[in-house]
Amino acid sequence: MSTTPAPCPSRTPNPAPAAPPPSSSPSGARPRPVAPPSQAPSPAPRRHWLRAGWLMTASGWGANQFSALLGAYRTELGLTTATTTALFAVYVLGLIPGILMGGPLADRRGRRPVVFAALALSVLATCLLMAGAAAAWLLWPGRFLTGLGAGALLTAGSAWIKELSCEPYGSARTPGAAARRSGLFLSAGFATGGLAAALIARWAPYPMITAYLPHLVLTVTAALGAAGAPDTSPNRDRDRVRVRDRVRVRARPRASGSPATPAPFRRLVVPVAPWVFAAPTIAFATLPGLVGAGFPGGQTVYAGVATAVTPGAGILVAPLARRLAARHRTAGAATGLAAVVLGLLLAALAVARAQPAVGLAAGAVLGAGYGLCVAYGLTEVAALAAPHRLAGLTARFWSLCYLGFFTPYVVNVLTTTLSLPPVTVLLGVAGLAVLTLALVVHRSRADR
Image 1: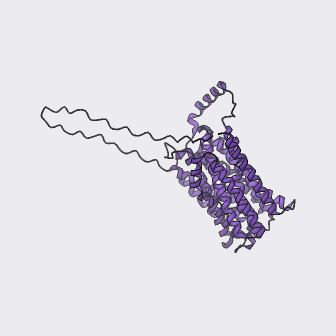
Image 2: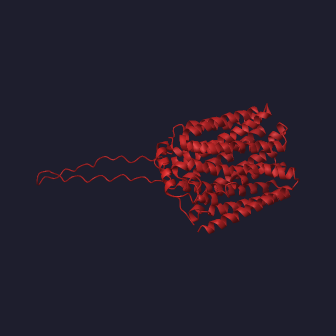
Image 3: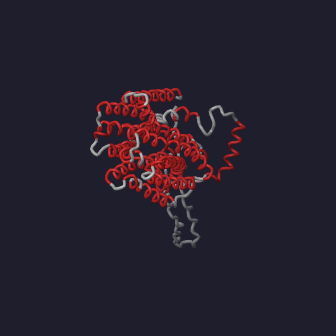
């Protein structure tokens, strides 16, 4: 079954000016022309979504700046690989409650207050990470609060950008196109944050402090830019929506699932979501420790390059994601999962041959899979969610996506505790991706 997202409300054209009444001049006199009433052209919608988009870039930057510093923490502070990998995973422990609380709260209270509260939390978290250079235990609450703030910002910010892209604030024609904008801005933050942090950590003084300064500057700048964007709070419709939901519950049973979690979301989006971040985290958190030693400049620079290449490839596949979404509902998911499988196979080859260049190629392919999968998920969420439940369903999607951030930790446990070869573990993960691809294709055909 193929569905097309409902278009954003289109602008109502301005009515044509009424014809002037017949002239009442005396017979034989030449009628005087009547000037048509002046009509100012309708102003083009301001790009408020662009202001909010930089908030997503700041969120992606803050999430990925730590990833490129894992090697630096091992060399500068003497942290073990298990500790740095656990610090990487602690981010998810804060992120998931942030997502699950931030989405419904944004639906009830509005997008703006949740977004700016999340930004303040993100600034506090970065300050704790900077203080971690002197007291390593501060890295744990810093990473947890980074996830908490990013989770709330992801859900509220994604919904805000989507709504600011459509009428009356923007001119996007479909909710899918509007929703994909948040994914692109997030990917831009992922790509630039890790690379900037790695380069600063490699050549700047006091690397564990100065590497975090750009995020503070970007966050404050983005907040000032978004201050003029209007809030798209659904509060004015809240009472009406509650009454309508009560009527619907009395009128028909919930045979197809609750309105907050549509059946197509459970069947087609849930299996794909964890691969959104499982793929790129393997590229920039696992591979640098396995093949980065042979890279000029060491693991830190290699990790920084990987964090730029991986999400950068996700940005480049955005036009392909749009074409696939127009062709078939699940084409983006199937193509993205196929790219993940190919990327994991290349990653296994890079580890087996100890080839950093092959590892970067694997990161690019995994990044393409990430870009296609996240675009598919956001498009589906925008098409399936009612306006008053958009942030809530977006929260469910992002929480499932970020389960993939545990993948490097699982890989580390399997390789160190169970002594499994890293190549074997990567091939096993590729097998799981193949099974997911087969499941999505089967369910898509069954729904036709």
